Image (tube, rainbow, N blue to C red):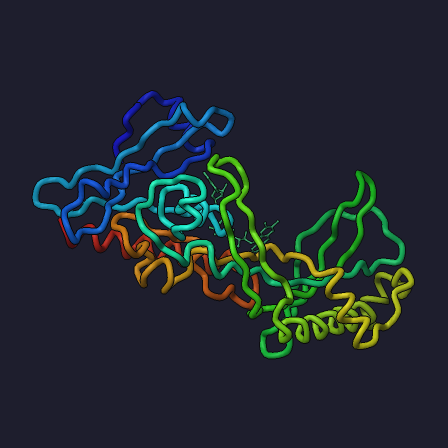
Length: 314
Ligand SMILES: Cc1cc2nc3c(=O)[nH]c(=O)nc-3n(C[C@H](O)[C@H](O)[C@H](O)COP(=O)(O)OP(=O)(O)OC[C@H]3O[C@@H](n4cnc5c(N)ncnc54)[C@H](O)[C@@H]3O)c2cc1C
């Protein structure tokens, strides 16, 4: 990539700041039948105003090469679909509502948003000071559908509580991400529609029961006491109500630029050239356990493939 401005402070700012694609996807200049091609990215400083934007351009192909390279978008499930839409790639209605010049009417951008529903219980009867801790052990049950983890959470500077949470893997409910504003710093509007499918509700009741079972198990009660803060065993109807009221995120949200709908098998955005998305927004399903390792492997694998592709075209 070539930087239009080469002062070192800009590079630092570039890393820290919010960026979005330039509208320089030059569709008007492309030949008939050719897809619009990305030429680079435009970014602003996070705290700056949108009028002070900087452009970074992809390097033109060198002699004996036809490769322009690609812009690789890895802003995550909550930002990659938003950035594509701000760049004019997304559902026509969305783009028109915000007066964004249309580069490609790609209806599936922002669709298939999913978040794994989770239920958690505080399991310590006497909260005390412990070192806050991330999950050390994960239990997987029922055909990989339920993942149970425990975590030590700080609740005040000198008090922690222990929670046991269950995540529902492979939910069916799907939601949508839409733009709320044309300013790239504004959060998009995201709906996950947790438990809107009956099979997810039934599975959530199982998660709730499993978490309850673990929290009242011999070893958990041995270490943490058996007073569940008045929590009693719930009946079927109560469990459903509990799920409705207490469903929360496990922070494994994904989708919005899913494989096969927005990106092709090489993670290239369909309908345009020179843009790839490589991150959790491309996942059709999140892995049963924690997704980060899978996503890092995806990044490395796609990176190696892109290098191979570039070497073979030069
Ligand atoms: C609180 C929390 C705890 C988690 N714990 C675990 C765990 O223990 N194990 C596990 O496997 N997974 C965990 N996850 C899930 C995991 O972090 C994500 O699934 C994974 O990081 C997603 O990777 P990604 O590349 O899609 O996006 P991200 O890792 O979110 O990367 C996106 C990057 O893009 C940047 N960005 C976004 N928008 C813009 C913009 N407009 N301009 C410039 N930069 C932008 C973001 O700042 C971020 O650095 C956790 C997630 C959260 C939120």
